[in-house]
Length: 140
Image (cartoon, rainbow, N blue to C red):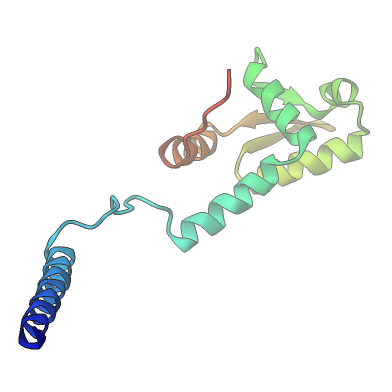
């Protein structure tokens, strides 16, 4: 009986070895278990986008952009923003400066007032980056 046990044990070991070798070969030559990630932002793109999103993260700036998008003339004077935003003129001017430096708005001085308009290309750049990189599911 002793030699029979050795044969059985030897066969069991052979089966285990073949199983592990087969698993290893399958892992080496099969497709990866997950879909490879493609099209992700580079570190530089992420850094730039984070900076732009920080500019947009202020409620007053978001409201300013919303107002500019809906302005009939396509532009708004700072003097027309102070009342609806309930902010002082210097504060509105500061927000406009931040938006302008980030490339979201352009400005033109006319006498003592500065008129601001959107830069559509910059808005589109952020929209495209978010559309192609983020899927948001809003619960019903």
